[in-house]
Image 1 (cartoon, rainbow, N blue to C red):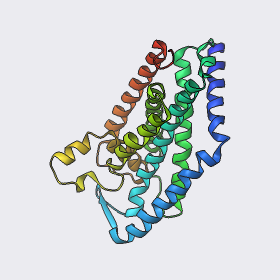
Image 2: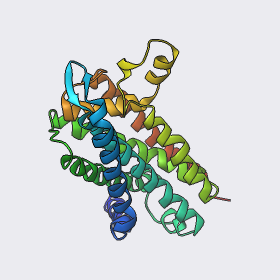
Image 3: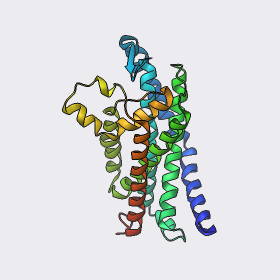
Length: 261
């Protein structure tokens, strides 16, 4: 990477990170409040009725079982929201043209948006994990896998958010993608239940096609050291998906998709 390209990448990444750090009430307060409620209602109130969960040979409290899924929900939602909002806002107000006319290559512009979105996702995911420690004594059984899965899934959803930011034609499109695409996939991805608890049949088969199952299980493997699916295979597939979406992002930028009238 040339000095000009490196300077442009660092500058754009820094601007995007400072954009959400300077607005902590919008970035960190909503997930803080939402996840305190999740842990209080699903973990404490319902958790006392559910008791423990049998998970890949482990017996864990229900509140401990749902913590990794809530971390995934917060991390990927924020990674997706950051890159999609930033690109759409830049298009809407036409200041993205400043980056497009700079000496930076399209791949470096895309990398800056993806990295800044992933940073936001990682920070929010870490915040939710810290909140969880006030409700349960969960540890980190596999730190390498926890870090690797957290990095891959935030990069993946930040990359998907770039596509969303280019595709959206108005603000309603952005809300629709997060509410009707990301969150349903997470809630049907084994956050609140185990895949093995589902009856065999079409519903379980459809669930196994949901990529969230592998993300939630990957983060759960990092925290608890147990997973219903092979963590190495999941990590490899998710890494491949991430690279594929990054290439799509760079291609769309080069084509000017959503960027030119």
